[in-house]
Image (cartoon, rainbow, N blue to C red; front, side, top):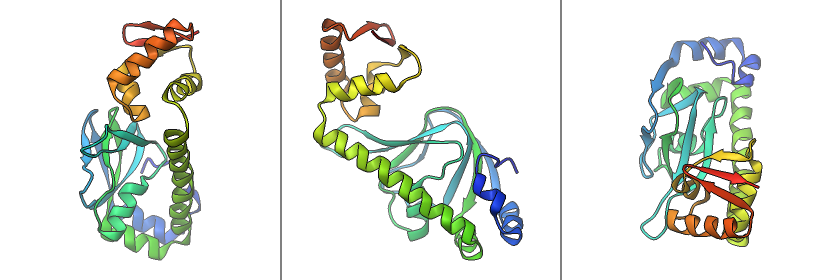
Length: 203
């Protein structure tokens, strides 16, 4: 069981750990695969050990808005909430890289949460983390100009030359490609960025 990216397992009760080893299934899924749609009821939880998954919401009146990206060692609260309550998922999930991980079914998750105080504490910590991120996202969308959000996102990247398309940046910031392209052109005219094919250079 290659779940070393989930530190809480080091403290899992022996009985719960044995139960977990018997009830998880390894999975490998290629890039650009929809794991579940907004409105689906999830029947398995994904424990991600490699790769990245995008969680996004959409409606008829707005572009997709990325809620957060799921990375190795994290468990998705949209996935978890839908599974435990057997209600519609409030967002869709799509792999943005090839991924590897493990699936655990709904009955096993419920049994594990009854058996293990450690797992219950981990679940509560997930909600705290994601609520902080979502609150920050809402504040950004409501109170910050989009050009400010673009520059802030660019500054958070490890390199000044950022390999990303306008469409991909629009998805990350919950806008449209046309609007993002227009604002990037304005930022280029101001000397904030230089635009290249498939890349944005932060000056």
